[in-house]
Length: 277
Image 1 (cartoon, one colour):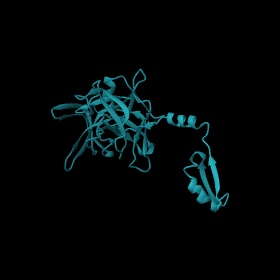
Image 2 (cartoon, one colour; image 1 turned 45 degrees about the horizontal axis):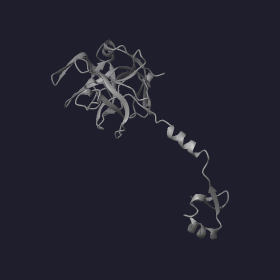
Image 3 (tube, one colour; image 1 turned 180 degrees about the vertical axis):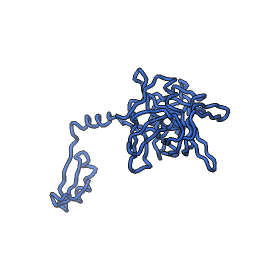
Image 4 (cartoon, one colour; image 1 turned 60 degrees about the vertical axis):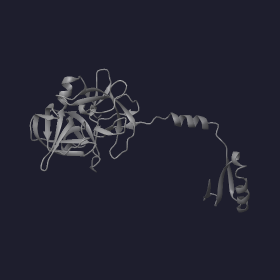
C-alpha cells in the first residue's frame, strides 16, 4: 500500500518482508525518491483474531409485514404477528393458504425464508410452517427454529417517513363496522381503510372462509399473512393488532381486504401474542 502521510510529509510505502523478492524491482525503483518504507509482520494473534471474526454470528431482524419466500426463492406470503406457546416456542402467524402448491421438506412441511421489502431472496431460514388451517379459518404457524433470527413485535411501515416502525402494544377484537384498520404486507406495503363488515364469509375456489373482518384497503397476492391493526394518531408509533390479512377483493370501484381475527387463532391454539417492550 502506498500513500502520502502528512505527519511525515513524505511518501510512505507499506510492505511485508515475505514479499521482498516479489517487490524487488519496485523497491529498487522507488528508493531514488527516498520514501519511508514501513514493514509489517504477521501478528502472533492474527490467527486468533481471524477465528473470532469467523465465529461472529449473522443475526437477522424480522419485522411483521415483510415477506416470506420458499426454498425455490419465490415470494409466497407475508410475516404476521409473533406468538409464543407454553413451552416457550416461538411462532410467526401467517395465512394457512400459504401452504398450498409449495415444495415440501422431507417432514412434509413448507420451509419459509425471510424476504425484506425490495429484496432478492435471502435464504435466511426462519422455520417450517408446522400448523395449517385453510377452511373455515385461514391461518398457519411458522415455527421459528433459526437461532440467528432477532424476533420482534414491530410492524414494518417504511413508506411513511415519520414512523417507519410501529410497535405492537396490545391486541383487540373488532366488534362493529365503521372503525379504521391498516395492514402491512410485502406486495402493497401499508394500506388502510374503514371496516365494512364483521363476521363475514367468503368462498374462493369452493373453499369457505368464515369469521372475517372486511375493510376498505388494497391488498394483492403476497400480502396474505401480514398483520392487521388499528392505530390512533395521538398514540403512534404504538398500535393494536386485531388479526392477519388472508384475502382481497378488487374491482373498478371497490378494494377490500379480508382479515382473520386474532381471536380465532386464540380459540384454536393456546398462544400468547408477543408485545413490544
